[in-house]
Image (cartoon, rainbow over all chains, first blue to last red):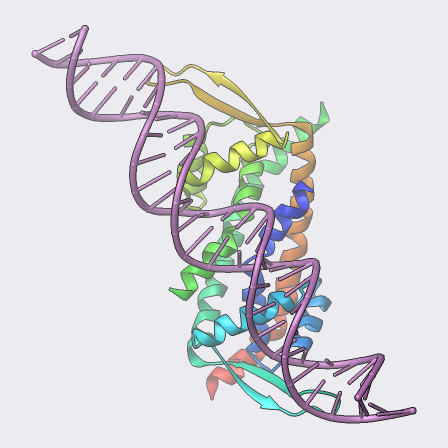
Length: 119
Length: 119
DNA sequence: GCCTAGTACCTTGCAGTGCAAGGTACTAGG
DNA sequence: CCTAGTACCTTGCACTGCAAGGTACTAGGC
């Protein structure tokens, strides 16, 4: 599966961007995050998420707070720190830049693609 | 540099997408590709590009043709194969999907971010 | 013929990531 | 106790971008 592999690569990095975005306004715990990402058509497993969250937390970008649950073990509610907010802004810019680049490249392509695939 | 690292991740996959896009209409050789990517603000080194092109070629997505140069060694001009064109379409869809997802997530974020950063 | 500079192609090794699989620990109910 | 459900975490694999270093062709000076 060539395409699938590339698409996985595409989603790299955005995942982090999306997560930081989702944490920008709410305290959220992992299962909730997975759920929200799924609603935006980004399928992620917890084996992906936990290392990512831990990494961001150790880097000082996230903070967490334990809260007990009535239906199981306690939950870790994450939220952004001030540096995390700064990162979010940087990623937002980067995202817009990349978007711009892709637009630029794609715009020069589409017209000619049509002609060529016509053959 | 946390942000820089993430941004590198972000560009993963897109690079492949951009390259396939650039090859959609023209035969291009490596140095030319680097140049065009640079014009779209995507800085890439040849150490990144050669393995990528070789990989795509071995997967049957690209084909190449040697052409002699007047100012040095011969050049390898790449172009898309039919499966490569198919990949381009798939990546295009994936790109739009991701774009949609990010929009969805970001739209829910921005409003509240403003309020919160106001603190 | 030999040397240097310029161009083009390619390989190796490192650091970083997503993900599947497997593991620990808490709660509730029989 | 034992099972089921939930939540958190770790390990190992495959893959990638990139810096650094290498090979090979041409042209021009001597």
